[in-house]
Image (cartoon, rainbow, N blue to C red; front, top):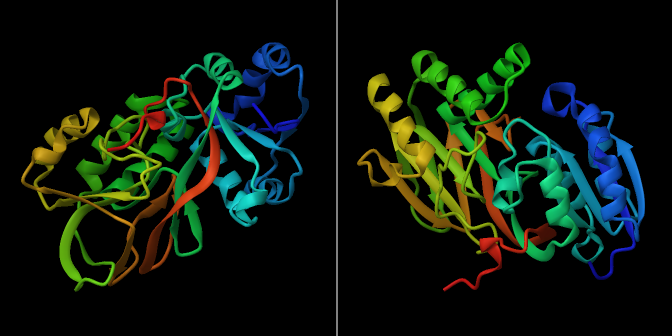
Length: 311
């Protein structure tokens, strides 16, 4: 890793249902062996504000995020406060519930394997999204998607479960209890506004959300575009069936689905509805959304599809 001398490891002890501190302790010796030639400092984050502040102020050349999507989301808020030339390299060790951003970077889900992949990783410039003043790395969604995300958080706290099954359980509960179309006004660039009643409006920088559900299977995090997936109103039974297709990324052929790519859009709502940004609650009725090409340098696995030339 050329130009890297100082590494800051940020461990979110609240990740993995408050077990990240213990999990990281199991990998410390391997980390020290893999990164023995670098000046490494490990800090346990104390809050979202603490994480953001460290991202904004550290003099490290590389930040390694040890946690889930929320942890790397918070780090990115701090990094994006800095001029582009002063943003440290970013890496992810997935110890979270969903780990969708690590999946986008083609990193192994096993933290130890991820560390080994990072020690031989490749630097790559990657896009980010901006929604009003909030940065997102993977996903931004409105409606039933966001309701599922919030049920996932509650279910994780109550059951101590993780991964795709956790999201599936939350999705089934949300479809049974929260399924409701909302009226959207969507403006793409300089085009005329579109008015739609939608169950789902997902804006993706990467392909997945919810621990691997392929809501935007063709999304590429370094193509300078955001991928949009919209779903129109359906019955509960139809939505439950469609959920199985979303898990595999084969839902885009359904007549209720509309997909497209864009660099900029505005989403307007008559009232606040469930909305989430990388799993964090988002509030408001007007959202100005854009892609920021080449926003960050990240470490990806050597076999990452993101390294392949785009046509």
